Length: 90
Image (cartoon, rainbow, N blue to C red; front, side, top):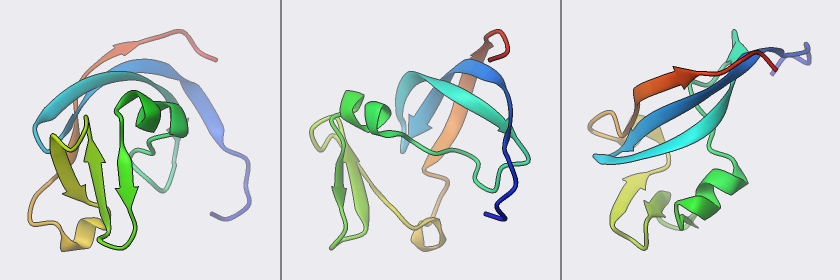
């Protein structure tokens, strides 16, 4: 990042798909952010996620789905927004 303050636009309830596994979570919406999405610790806990650094993978829901951590090595889009429910500004 460039050290500039982030502009928080609000929060939204968003459905996401992780390699076909659909789940819902609350996300903070930030304008002009370098990343499309960041999963926080609470989201990772809720998903029963396991981050495997040796294999550069993320498994969710007790290994039901496993995806690569580094997008450039993935052959397809592994995480995408399915639907959102906008909330009031923060």
